[in-house]
Length: 219
Image (cartoon, rainbow, N blue to C red; front, side, top):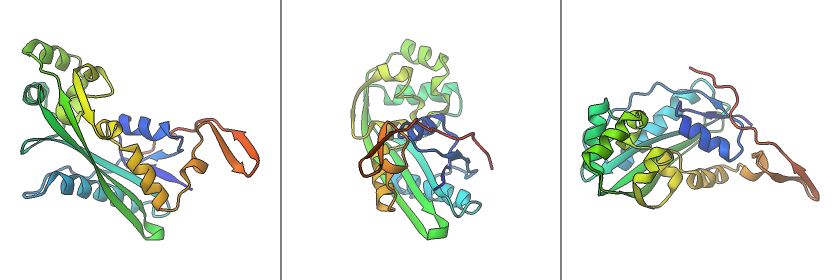
């Protein structure tokens, strides 16, 4: 059974590896453009479907896992900042407020005619930040490739007051949702996972190393 992560995000690679799946990495080149009138849920769902389809067209016998994440504050979508000035603007906008993080996830196997798309939602409240805080954080470089201009799993964690919902969704790949999607597709996640001790046959406990990602490949 082959899995492909249709993303070049190191955060998604780390999250998927953490549950013990062996997988290849094949980023898609789908443009991330919001369409007029599209809700945040529709937006991330569509992008995850498009990313999965682009990779599935070349590897129809593999299980493709694709995701897209965006941040919503009020009516404004906050995606990856264009530059440091844009990152400062985003952080000043969300500081001291609650925003919503949406992730669309698609699991697809073209050969089996299977495609399932789901959306996770988490509420995140950031502490109030002054200009010095924001300038310092942007100078670390961490906000540059992150939706909403912060990394909850990195330095930015100290600015997060609370999270309601999935933490891994905020990082970029909601693992609980993915686990349910894999189960729904008939994939025994605990059997294919290489984490810890697993039962290969009744009465036979084996210790298995964590496989993690295979050597990344590209389109």
